[in-house]
Amino acid sequence: MEPGDVVIIVKEQPHKTFKRKGADLLIEKEITLLEALTGVDFMMTHLDGTKLRIKNKPGEVIKPEDIKTVLEKGLPFHKSSYKFGNLFILFKVKFPDNIASPQMQQISGALSNMKPADTDMTSAEETVTLTKFTESQRNTHAQGGTEGNDSDEEEGHGHPGGQRVQCQ
Image (cartoon, rainbow, N blue to C red; front, side, top):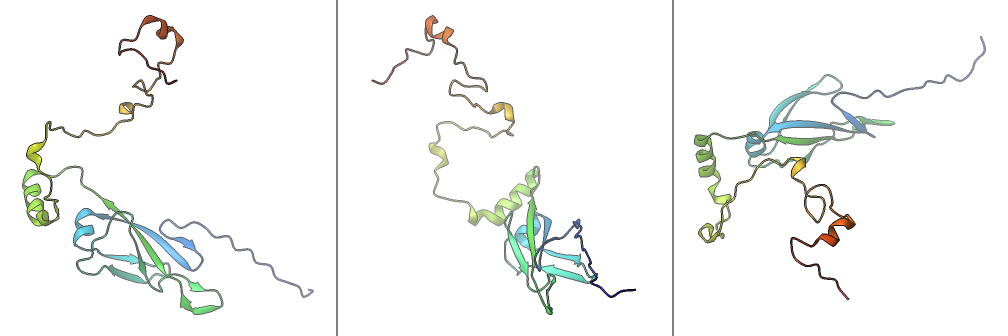
C-alpha cells in the first residue's frame, strides 16, 4: 500500500432545532404572551446532550422577534476548542385569539398605567369596530375594488361621480 493524502468530505446536515452560522447557533422559541410579559424559564437540550435551563432577567419584557444571547453556548471555534461561539434565541410570541371578559378586566387593571390617557374618547364622532383582514377587502385600484375600470367606453357615457377635471 502506498502512502498518500486522505481526503475527508464533511457534508453538514440541517438540524430541526439549531441553525449554524460559523461558531454561533440560532434557535427559534415560541413563547406565550404571559411568558413574554412575566419571564421565560425553559429547558433545552444542546447538541452535545447537555441540558440548559434558560431564563431572562426578572421584569424584562420580551417583544415579538426579539433576539437574546446565551454567551459561549455555541460551537467551539476552529483550532480553539476551548473558546465557544454564542447561542442566539429568536423569540416568537404567540398571542391568544381572544380573551374572556373577566380576564380582560384583570389585565386592564394590571396594565392600566400603560394605556395612553391623553385621548378624549368622548369627542369621537363615530365609533367603529375592527374586523379580521381578508385579501378580498383590498382595493388595489384607484376606482375601487380589485379590478380597474379603465375602459374607454365609460368615458362617453357620462360620469356618475361627477365631471372629470384635467390639469393644464
